[in-house]
Image (cartoon, rainbow, N blue to C red):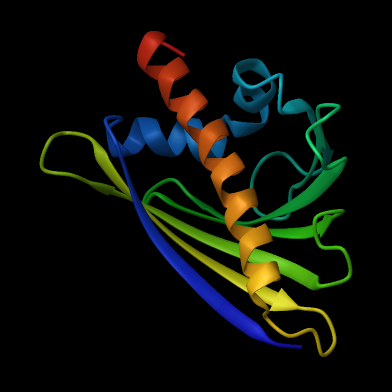
Length: 161
């Protein structure tokens, strides 16, 4: 198994506590509401939203994927840290064993947040990281970013959400 990491920082006008609530705590309710063309449903299979919770995300028809299962590893409301592992997905296609995300919400000078994301990819068996695999990961990351942007827009338009 190989391991490689990608890091990113994303800015949002949402203050850190509101961003954490939207992108970590309320994500299972917001994703299908704001991006029904991408996310058909999010079902909690086990747990209460905190560490150990397993969610099944069912993608909309035509999205290119059928589902993914996420396990919440950390949900730290005091330090605004959220970590989860994608442990099953047809995206993996026997090339990826799992993907772990560590996300930290930090206050930005403009009143918004900087969302710091570290994604660690664990390849299956002796799978090599090829340009094709990296292109697939980039495409999936771009689709994920569109859903996050839809959540951000919804929260900005519905401040009491």
